[in-house]
Image 1 (cartoon, one colour):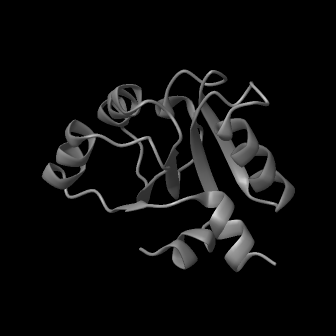
Image 2 (cartoon, rainbow, N blue to C red):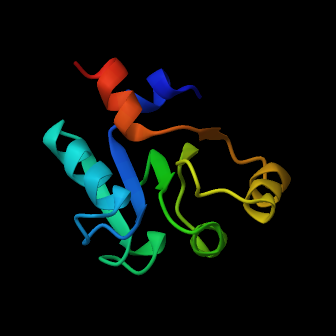
Length: 118
């Protein structure tokens, strides 16, 4: 799935500090909501991806890689793709995604909004 396809999805889980206006997770959450996407903030607002009532299209990692990996490992919900924001990746996370054949993309939802949601 490329960034353009990701932006065609509707339900996003944003993992990170979505309560602090200085953090990118907060900025991404607000921008996605402003563009009409369904957003589930995980990390500070919801403790787990499993707390989301409906299926998820995209999991957006805007969180320390160790915390993101833990949340992914605990996830029992179906989803289509993981988007890894700059700085949210490490070798262990990538190895987990590869080992479990989880589709992922290094990218940024803010760029996706700017490029594909005008």
